[in-house]
Image (cartoon, rainbow, N blue to C red; front, side):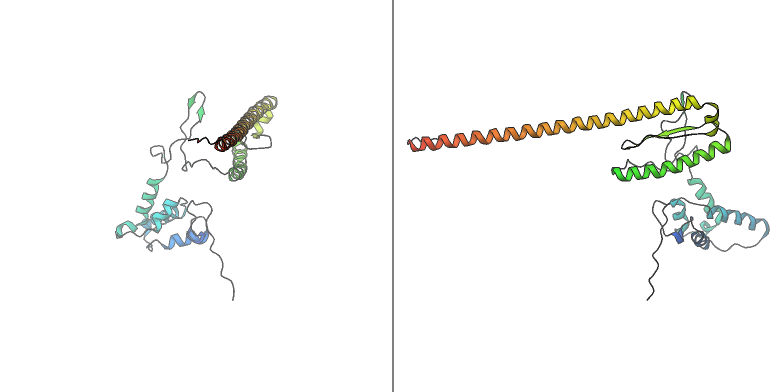
Amino acid sequence: MPKEKAVRHCRRCPNSPALSQCSHSVAGRAYLASLLPPIQDEGDSDRESNSSVDRLLSVSRPDELRLLATPVPDSSATDPVLIADRIERQRVRAGRPLYGHVEGCMRGKHALNVLRTKPLHAPEPDVRKATKRYNREMNAIISRCERISVETGCWLLIGAHHANANTPAIHYTSPKLRLEARDQVSDLTTKFWRLTSSLINARRVEAVALQNEVDSLKEQATTTAGELEQERAQTASLRAMLSTLGVNVV
């Protein structure tokens, strides 16, 4: 018998829904469109409804997908315009920072409030997973930086180094900055590499020092245990000698 095809899940959505029911695929968008009631062809109202459908098909957030897939008891809430308005109200905006602001972003000497578009998760404890994601995300970031710098003509310099890396730091410089300040950029990237390398070496030196301290404590514990055992043997020997002499030892 032919084998059944495994259900493919979306990797871009946190809850990993079936790809056939997700807005990131053609089949998924068709499925979401089928959840909407039929739209009548009546002039301006038809164009307004069609624009609402287009907005619904462009959703990509899991909470928006759940909003579409959840049945609503009130028949008036199935109106595509109302659903689109509800979805729009849930999106991140300046007056509604759902996930807060990016920390460490500055414009000159002043903090720049940049909205987080996604929730900030806890650090990954697994070093291998963290390194793998770092490499994957940095490739995407560098590619986007190139597009922004080439298409807008901005000066752009970015650098990154992982705490567990065994290779030099990653850095990218926009074409305009390379052309107009090549030597200065070289100095900046060298300083950044030296800074991160010193931090990595400091972490390793600290780790070695802690390991040496642990080994020393273990050695002391072993020595103490040996001395204690020797004293117990001497005590047992003295008790045996006193017992042969008829002396009762409590």
